Image (cartoon, rainbow, N blue to C red; front, side):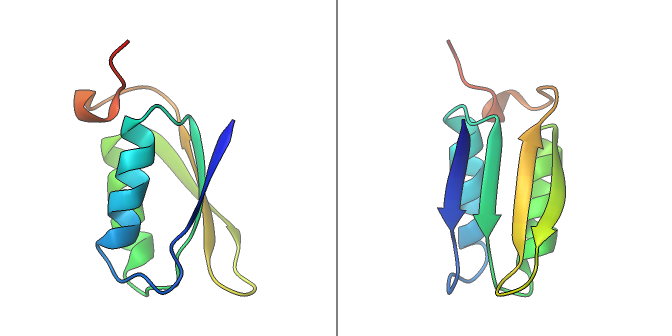
Length: 81
């Protein structure tokens, strides 16, 4: 299941915080719309720390990114079962 996050109008670090929370809560795939110019770098850093890949999937209205977990790298982003 893909988690959807609409972070339009939120300034960094809030989009990155919402992404990190979704990954900590166990999301394997997150689609996030973020229009802050600093968001791509912040989201990429969170994705890398979580061992996830980030792809730009749409840029028409506001940049939309897909973050998909590959392998757990950082235990703080891996849900405890």
